[in-house]
Image: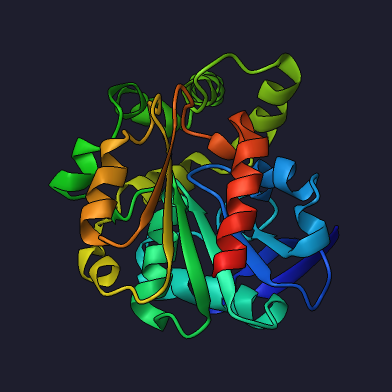
Amino acid sequence: MDTHTVSGGDDTELHVDVAGPDDAPPVVLVHGYSQSRLSWYKQFDSDLTEEFRLVAPDLRGHGDSEKPDGTDAYHDPTLWAADVQAVVDEFARDRAVFVGWSYGGLILSDYLSVEGTDDVAGVNLVGAISEKGTDTAAAVAGDAFAAMLSDLETRDAEASVAALGDFLDICVAGPLSAHDRYFMLGFNAACPPRVREALQSRRADHEDTLRTLDVPVLLTHGTADRVVLPTATENHAALVPDAERSLYEGVGHSPFWEAPERFNRELREFVVRC
């Protein structure tokens, strides 16, 4: 695995991990709210890197990427689109398959609405949202997740870390090992509360973008997801009637972590079809 830095929108510096042959089909993995490129550890630590070029950025405000001040840096869809395009331009030699987890689905929707699908071979939405600040977005937010938002945004360090622990607990259906829980807690804590607050205060609606997609779409969702309810996938399927759906029975918000063998197999099959 190689690590790189690229300049995204407004010259925001983005940290990117890359693994796999330079000339292999590119797969761009976009993590979720408060997370990091390290969320995709079980994909990078697999034989996917023998067949594909995996590209995983830390989103602005997350991980080792730059964390600009002000809410505008996290509300403007053109900045998110510029971030993704900068990663594509640097590391994708061919049209890429994009995987967007959770809030990453909203970022990919920003990208698709601004840049279109010229550089896109396919889209895999994983426990994803594509709206924020709408009635539809509120309806697919799990009650447990919605109840902890104020604590996730607090500047009180002790309360913030406690809330992050609670958040990680509902990101999976079963208990995390101590190793995994503290591994995840570390990179979630790298996202400042002010960034988490800005991410949640957005308003965005990409229904028209999804309705007009002209590339293959795979919708992946755990039936036990307590962060983004499985009805989100039903909404996306209604917008993209030709989309393929893959429901993970008894799996929570993180299918790529909870059921990596199945997830990696289905991702491989999807990329090959694309």
